[in-house]
Image (cartoon, rainbow, N blue to C red; front, side):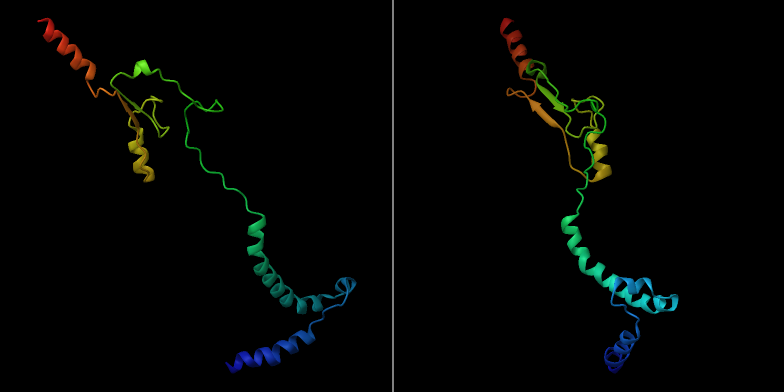
Amino acid sequence: MEAVWKYFKVQLPAYLKAVPLPKTFQGFLNLNREEWLELLPLLILVSILFYLALSPLTSLFFTKKKKRPHINTKVDKDKEKVATDFPIEDLGDKKVFCRCWKSNKFPLCDGSHNQHNKETGDNVGPLILKSSEGTGGKKEEKKAKVKKEE
């Protein structure tokens, strides 16, 4: 602890008194090579302290927004917005729609989300639409009609 006290009380003031610190800007231009070398450690220290003091402030004013990666990497990239119509009549008893944008049968799901989930740790799955009658509702109605006719 005595060495630290000696440095701040004796050596540092002696160094600062010996530093050729000009009083004007013109004085800096008139310094010779040896005087610049004596001044260099102080300039480096002041620059580091200035940087450390201002760097937290600069992040408040000069932050760049990070672009997030695109989710859709292959479906209708030439369009401004991808919107797909699917007639309700064509749904039948059940349709499975893609939500991961990886399907080769887009907008229908082909199971590509399984590979995507393994690679990324994501948990995305398809949108499944079923008729309110349940799976096979129309087929069961047809079977019932056939039995009545017999």
